[in-house]
Length: 179
Image (cartoon, rainbow, N blue to C red):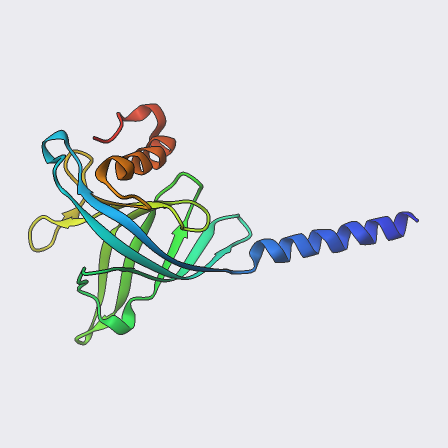
């Protein structure tokens, strides 16, 4: 009797680990808002459609890893179309992950960091801090007047609520809410 109970528990544990680690398909087309932070920029907002296609898996540490593409309609990236597959590693539930393209073009390696992404487990809701160029060799984002994309949202107010929910969960009392 004890052996059969232990075998049943072992089988259940192995099945649970396999289910936990099997990649889950992610296919979303989400309407969102691209906006600029700061009270003085409250009128800057534009509707965007974001297509996310790929797979999400977890490693033994429980970290989520997305492999696939994120396409923001009407936005041109300085990345060859055939090299836009991403591998995004989320290090914790409240930690942003870097959206970074890496590849080989024109006889050299390149890296293009689009920004940082906060998201829920199935990527159906997210907020992206969009990096901007500050000169020929510098790019970054700031919480004062940085660009954001949040979805699903139909206006800046909804988008800002999504961004603040993720941002404040991550930074807690260390910063004030985004405006």
